[in-house]
Amino acid sequence: MEGSASDPQRPQAGEASNVLKEVSKLWWLWLVFGAFWVVVSVVILQFDEASITTTGILIGAMFIGSAIQNFAIASLAESGRWLYGLFGVLFLIAGIVSLISPGNTVAAFADVLGFLFLIVGVFWIIEAFLTREANELWWFGLIGGILMVVLAFWTAGQFFIERAYVLLAFAGIWALMQGVTDFIRAFQIRKLGQL
Image 1 (cartoon, rainbow, N blue to C red):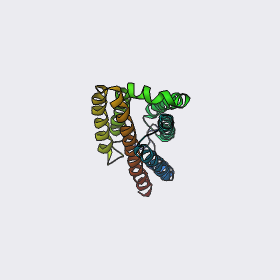
Image 2: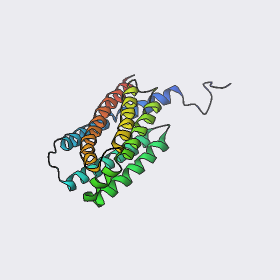
Image 3: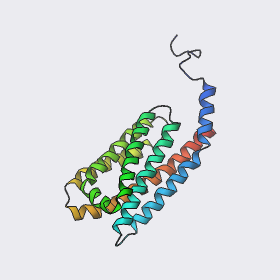
Image 4: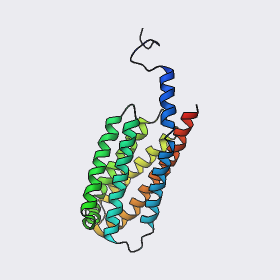
């Protein structure tokens, strides 16, 4: 009988509840990630005449922070683990390259800004649909992802100098959106543990 309680492929209700309670104990981790992203966004958005090197280092730190976050989620996720791991590896590579040559990072970033926004937008859209059943605010990530895809196509048509300024502004906005999303996730995960 498919779907019966004795099906060895399906976890028992008690096991699922225990897993949820264990994961929900780590809800504060998303608060830490969220605070990190908000601080990064404030630093980036406060630049009036930013040092190219400092900006390159911050961009590298953003990618490495995103990689660590994706690896943490991959270790906790039951489904879609490979997707979080793949994006974690991609973010880690981008972060390492950014830190190796921070001065060239901003120039290179401005050249490929549209493509990078496209990657982030697609990731947010996929993540929104993957978490739709467990996340009542999944549409927030979907809207953010769609906006990033639109920005990707708009930014690709800009001149280099304009792209460099757009890069700073949208890197700050990206970090701020990531921080807000992580704060929301923290309280949703905490709520799941209390059910």
